[in-house]
Length: 333
Image (cartoon, rainbow, N blue to C red; front, side, top):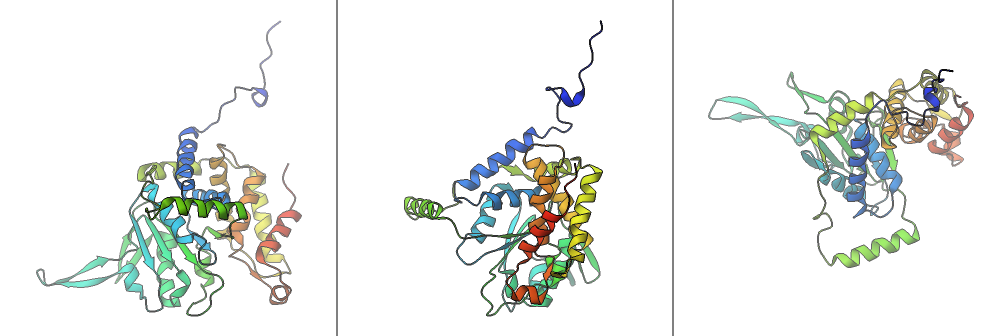
C-alpha cells in the first residue's frame, strides 16, 4: 500500500518561507547592547526595533528623567548610520533644520548648505518647544523622505528615521504638535516610571560607573545595508485577507466611536499593517497573527485619535478607548 503524503500543516519539518534567522540574531544582539545601559523597558525597546524594521518614525513621550534622550542616543550607537541631534527651541527656524543657501564668493553664486536633517538617524529633542512653522518644516521630509528648498528637491539617503521626544506635563514654553505631524509618526511610545526593583538596578549601575561614560562600550550591530535589507524582507511577510479586514474594522471603529471626536485616517491602517509585520519579524515569524495587530494598534492609534471633550473630562484616555475597540472587534478565525 503506497504511503500517504503527510499534510504540510502537520509536517513538523515545515520551514519558514522567509529566512529570518539572521534578522532575529541581529535584533537580539541590538537588544543585548541596549540592555547593558537601559534597565527594563522591554516593551519600549521592542517598539523602537519594530519601528526601524517598519521604516517608521517614533514619538517618545515621558516626564523628564525617564531616559528618553539617552535611549535614542543608545539606539543610534548600535546602528552604523549617520546620526544628528536637533534641539528644538522657541527661536528655531525652518532653515536651521533643512539648510539654507549661502553665497560662495569664489564662484559668485549661491550654494545650498544642508541642515542637520540630512542624516540617516535624527533625534529631535523636545519637539514641542518649537513653534508651528518650524514643526511644519518636518512634514515633507517625514512623509516623503525628501525636502524642497527654493524649488529644488533633495532626496534623503535611505534609511531615514526620526525619533522625537516630548514632555507631556510641562506646558510653559511649549507648543501643541499639529495633528498632521502626529499622523506622520508610526508610533507614540509612552515611557512610564521604572518599578522599584528596576529603580534599585538603575542606582546600582550608576554607582558602579564611577563617572565613566555610559555609552562608551556600546558596539555597532546593524549596518546601513542590513537595515535596508531587513526592511525589504519585512515587507514580504504574509498577512491573510481576513487580518487585513480586521485592521480595517479596528480603524473604522475609531471613526464611528461616540467617545472619540476624531478617528484615525487610512494612514493609520497602513501603519498597523506595516507595524504588525515588524512584530512578526521580531518574533521570528514570516506571517502576521491577530496578536501582532493588537500589539501594534495602541502605539499606532493613541496619538492619531482625539477623545471627545466630555469623555476627557471624565478621565477617559485614548489608550483606554482603543483597548475597548480592540475588545469589541471580532478576531478572525
